[in-house]
Amino acid sequence: MFVYPWMGIIANIPTTVQNGRNVGGSGSRLRDDLTNKGFNPLRVHPLWNRRGHSGFAIVEFRKEWDGFNNAIMFDKSFELEHCGKKDYFSPTRQSEKLYGWVARDDDYHTNGLVGEYLKNNGDLKSVSDKEAEDQRKASQLVTTLTNTLETKNLRLKEMESKYIEVRMSFRALMNEKDEIIKAYNEESKRMQENAHDHFKKISLEHEKMARKFSDQKTELEQREKELFDREAQNEAETRKLQHEKMMNEMATKEQKKADESMLRLAEEQKREKEKLHGQIIELEKQLDAKQALELEIQSMKGQLEVMQHIKGDGEMMQKMKAIQEQLKEKEEEWDGVEELYNTLVVLEREKNDELRDARKELIAGLNDISTNTRASIGVKRLGELDIKAFQIAAKRKYSGIQAKLKAAELCSQFQEYLRDANWHPFKILTDKDGNSKEILDEEDEQLKATKAEHGDEVYNAVVTAITEMNEYNPSGRYIQPEVWNFKQGKKATLKEGVDYLLKQWKQVKRKKH
Image (cartoon, rainbow, N blue to C red):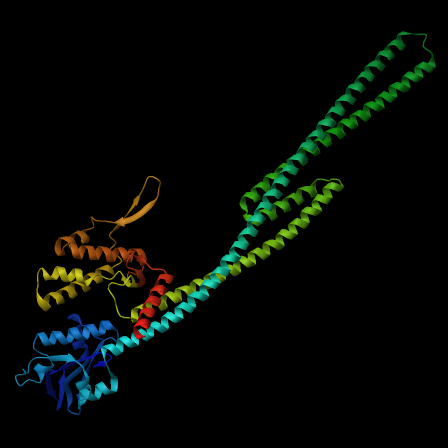
C-alpha cells in the first residue's frame, strides 16, 4: 500500500540553530535539486515543529502514473546510494547525508510529524486500486463519448440532407438565370435589328420621293419653256401653268421640310441606338461584376430600363410586366436561400465546436488510462523529444545513474531549443508548375552540429520533434497532445479513438465476468 497522491519522504536534512530555533534548507531549493535529477516533483513541503525545522520534508508527485514512476525512481535512486529507508534507520547512518524513500502504509500509520502530515493530505491505495479507478473512469468516458458521437452523427446527416437540398435549389436557380440572360440577349439583338431595318426603310422612301419630285420639277420647267416659246398659248393655260408652278414650289418646300424631318428622325434614331448600345455595354459590365443570383436581378432591372426608354406596343409592355414579376419572385427566392445558407453556416460552426470539445474529452480520457506501448490508438505529444534517443547517446559517454541524469539534462536543453521561434531549419522548394513545398533544411548549422556531436539517434529525435511542431503548431512552438494512430503514423479520427476505447472497455468487462 502506498500513500496517494504519491509522496516521498526526505530525512536527515541539515539544520542550524538561529535565535533559538532550528533552520534548514527551503522546499523550493530541494524541489529544484530533485527536478534536475529527473524526478519532476510538484512541490517539497518541509515539516516544522515547535523547535523549528524538524529535518524532514515531504515530496509530492503527480497523481498520474508518470508521477508514480517518478516516485519509484526517487526511491531507487536513494536506495542505490545506500540512502534509503533501511539505511536511515540503520545504526551506521551518516549524519551528513540526505535519506529518502517512497511513503508507504507503515509511514502513514507512524506517529509524529510525518504520519500526521500523510494522514491529513493523503490516503492509502494499492496499484491495483489505482488501476481499477482508471478503468471506471475510462468506462464512463466511453459511454459519454459514444452517446455524443451518435448524436453528432444524426445532426451531421440532417445537415448533409439540407445542404444537398440547397445545392439543388441553387443549381436550378442558376439554370433559370442563364435562360433569362439568353432570352434578354436575343431580345436586345432583335430590337437592334428592327431599329436598323426601320431606319433603312425610311431612307429608301426619302430617296424615292426625292427622285419623284426632281422628275416633276424637270418636267414642269420643260413645259414652261415650251409655253413661253409658243406665243399662241392662251391665258387660261398660262394661269394653269403658274398654278402648277406654285404647287410645285409648295411641294418643294414640303419636300424640304420632309427632308429636315427625315434628318431629325435619323439623328434621333442614331442617338437612341447609341444610347441603347451604351446601356447594353453598361449592363454587360454589371453582369460581369455581380455574382450568382444578384447578377440575374441586375440584368432584369437593366432590361426594364432599356424597354422604358424605347416606346413599344402592347406586346412589349406585357413582356416588361412579366419580367418585373419574375424579378420580384427571384428577389424573394434569393432572400430565402440566403437566410437558409446563413442558418446552415451557424449550425456547421456549432457542430465543429462540439466535435472539437469531444476530441478534447477523448484526449483527457486516453491520458487517464494506463499507457500501453503496443496500443494502436493513444495520445502522442507532438513536438516532444524521445528521451530514449538521449539515453542511448549518454550511455556512450557515461554509465549508471550519471548517464540517466545527463540524458535528462540534454533532452531538457534541446526541448528549449525547439521552443525558439528564431530557429527555423526549413526551406521552400517550388516546382516547374509553381507549387511550393516546405522541406527540412539538412544544411542547417544547428542540425549538422547536433548530428556531429551527439549522433544519429539524437539528430533523428530532434528532426522528428521540430517537424511535428512545424506541421501541427508552427506559431506556438509548444508540445501539442493529439489522438494518434501509431499503426498508421498519423492523427487518429474521433471515430477511431472512440472505437478503441469501446474495445478496451469490452475487454475489461469480459475479464470481470
